[in-house]
Image 1 (cartoon, one colour):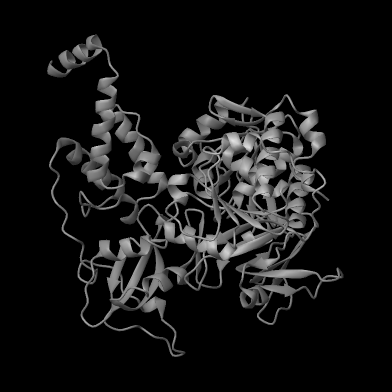
Image 2: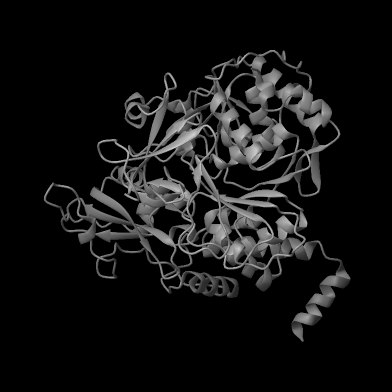
Length: 601
C-alpha cells in the first residue's frame, strides 16, 4: 500500500480537470492539488521527514491546510492537526508531545513557539517549494503506519494524542464511500472544527472518490440559518453538521429540490427526530476519536418517537455492551460500550498505561490480535438491534459538540497558587445550553477574581473549557468513600461566587449599544465593558447572533473572527470604529456627503 490509497495517481489523472476544493470564488483542480501536494511532500522529505515521523499543521481552514495534510501523508509521515485558536501553551505542549519534526504554521505564530520542530510557512517559502522534485510515488506504508494524531482532552490536565493508522483510516474511507454511495459527482462540505477528528471524515473519503469539497467560512459554520442557506446555494450533496447546529436545521423548511441528499450529524446527543419529513436522509453517527471518527451509524426517520438511536456498528466494526465484569448484558440492560474491529486506533501517544487501560484484547473475536476500546459511554440494545445511547459513566462531558475531560480543567486550575482544591461540573442555563462551574476551595482566605482565574485557565485551555462561574467552598462535601459528593455542591449565588473585577462604565454610544446587545443575548446584567464574551457564557452560536446584530446596527462587515479577536465590549467598540472609518475612507466625497446629509436629517 502507498499514500495513493487516499489520492491515487489514477484518480488524480482521471479527474485532473475536475474541481477538488472550493473556497468561495476560489477553486483548486485535482491536477493542481496533486502537483502542489507532491512538491510540498518533496520539500518535507528534503527537510528530513521520513516514514514514521509526524508533522504538525496549524493553519486556518484553507487549501494550504488540506495540501499540507496530504503532502505529509505522501511523505510517509503522520499529520497532527491544530486549531490556530488554541492557546499557545496548548500548542507548545502538543508540539513537544507529538515529537513533530516540522511545524507548518504562519511565521507570526511559529516564531512565538519554542519547540524542537522546524518551522515552515508555506506562504513564505512558496518559491522554494515550487522547485522541489516530486517524491517517489512508491513510498511504502503498511497498515500499521500512522496516518494522523489527534489530541483530545485528558484527565491528567494535559491533552492526550490519539494515534490512528493508515489501516484505520482506509477502513473509514471504504465504509463511508460504500454506505453513502459517494461518487465523483458529489459535492461535500468541510466545516468541522480544525484539530478535531470530524475534519478527517470530511476530507479523505471525498478526495479518494474524486468528489469536490467546499470550505465554509467561520461565521456560516456555526449559524443554522446561514449554514442552511450556504448548503442550498452551494448545492452540497452530502454534509456533516455537528449535532447542536443540525438539530435546529432539521426543524427548518427546506426546498423540495435541494441538492442535499445526505445530512450526517454526530458529536453530541440528538434529542429528537425531525417533526416532518425531510427532502434528504438524516443520519445519526457515534464514535470516539480512538475508533477513527465513526463506530455506529443509523438513519433517523422523521416523526419517530423518543430519542433517536445511534444506529448500529458500521461495517468491520463491532459494538459490545458489557457489565462491570466485562460480560455481555442481556435484553435491554444498560452497560458500557466497547468497540472492536478495524477502526480501533493504535493507542495514546507516550501514554502506555492509559493505552493499556483503554485499548484491551478483544475476547469475543476470532481475529488474531483483535482489540477493543473501552469507551466509558453507556447504552443498551433496542429490540431491533440498534443502540440507545445513555451518556457517560465517568467525568467526561460534551459541550456544544466538544469532548471535555472535566478533570483536565480541574488539574489546570489546581496549578493556581491561591487554589487548594477545585472540582468542575456542568450545569444548564435557561436556554438548555450546558456551561461549566468550578467549585473552588481557596488557600487560606485568598479571593482571586473571576477574571484572574479565567485568564489563568486561558493560558492552557481553549475557550470552551473555561468555567464561566466560580463558586467558593469553605469545605469539600465528601461521600462515605472519600470522593467529592457532587450532588451536595451548593448552587451558585451572588453570596458564594468569587468577586468579579469592577469594570468601567461604557464611555461611548457604541459601547452602550454593544453592552445592551451582549446583556440581552446572555440574559444577565452582570456584564462589564471589559468582560470577555466567551468567558461569561458566550459561545459560537450566540457569537454568530451577536455578529449579525452588529452588522445590522452599525452597517459594517463584522465577522465572527473579529469577535474572537476582540471579545470584550471595549475591544469590540474599537474594532467597529476602525471598520466604520475604513468604510468612510473608501467612500467618494459625494457618498460621504449624502451620508452626512442623511445623518443630520
